[in-house]
Image (cartoon, rainbow, N blue to C red; front, side, top):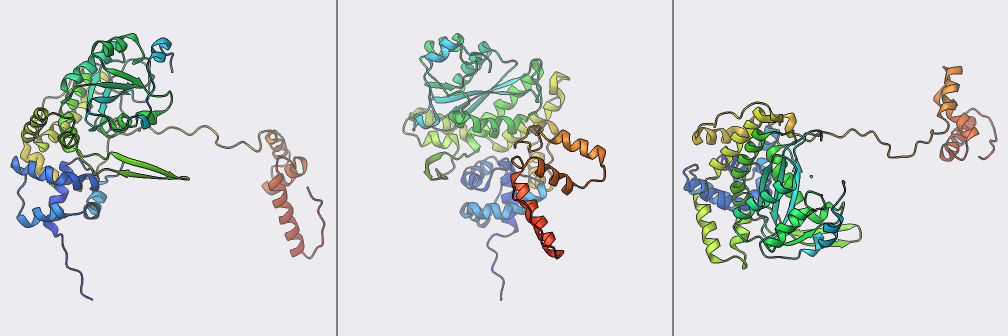
Length: 433
């Protein structure tokens, strides 16, 4: 039997690996949606030269084939897939509740807002926070670094992000944290005529849009380590300024189209992956003037330069971690060397430093009732008196003294004893427990 003709040769695989690295190692479905945009942008800036055959193959490739061709690359790189205190009662009761199902399809400008702690697992002292705003319509996400958790800084961060958004801010949805439920934010929303809503207490899914971005953007970029001090805040702010262009123009994301429940089975259907910029360009709610500005911004952006800026800033966290040291000098603008490194980056096993991982929680609690809670002291006495006693003998004694507490074990042991007696040729009757 003749082997099948290979459709995608080594040149296509190498180009796909480079594009995957330039897209920050996103999944196949998102990469498939990004390929036309990313190829055109990298060719426009002179970072990529593809033959017509390779270019046509990359544009025609399916998402499943992308994952299949990248499987050895992912395996070699070690890449794997990687989420109170008292409230202002009067303010809280004045803010209406909005759940995840209440959003529908609002126009751009209605955002969810949340804070992310960079405490490294220890809440003592002061540490940096990230303020995240995510637009419901497009998925456009902006982040700001706050040196401490304080309500006036939150309002200042919202005001800064509001000036950077390509659309007017219309509504703000927050959780029930006291840093949001206060008169400072209430006055700000009234002054700027923002519709202010809140989620239900202890229902994180009510803010599913921004919660997803907290993991996909904030934790992916800044990790789980502790950041404190002005130097760390400034470094994190520089990181978000570079990442906002890369995330909103070159990172496609899924958007839920519908969800149906059939008994215990939930079927979810998603729209095709698009970048936030592409959703705004396709939106009927956005003016043509804003769309022209977005097109001009996209034409001037270099995804490789943005990714290099993100990587350089991430390396600076090693010096300012936990508030010690000074940020290192800015890296040289050698894009060619960085681009050459992307072509072979998958060959280096990717072991993120400890501060980039989420600390594992020790499982100290019981998930089942202890069946020996009231009888263990008796078992210890038997063991001290007769150290050679077997576990089976101890269990038989417990079943005889506490038949109600060990009913299943009593029946099992009675059956086992009857079987052993029959094998020994004995006819023994045991009283039922």
